Image 1 (cartoon, rainbow, N blue to C red):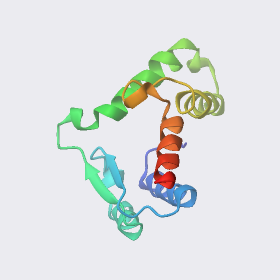
Image 2 (image 1 turned 30 degrees about the horizontal axis):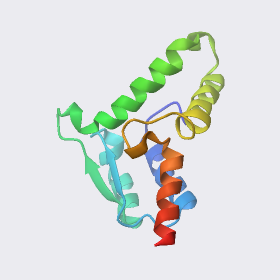
Image 3 (image 1 turned 90 degrees about the vertical axis):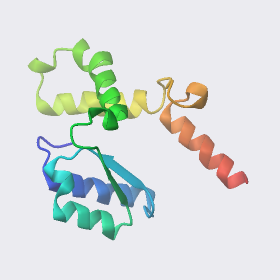
Length: 133
């Protein structure tokens, strides 16, 4: 997490995904049309890793509704509940990381997917099913 949205942040994110998950070929990366996502360097990184780029349509905010919903949930359930304006940047980063990785991805019931599983539980169950087949 950085304090800017430059193309380097986006490129580093793709590199981190590759390190964590290995092969990325055929995966879709969806974003809005921010200049960091349409830059030559970022698009080259996607091609290098075999990722398919999906961009929101111009002036179509609903194309990115899932992520907008996530950020609304983060703000409503966590950030608006604490005095972040009095906290240091690193403290706010810690709060956000803890919310995402120790609660949202592992414990929070998610009504979007079948069974209402948290994202990590859903991913694990799909991996187990895939390996058993």
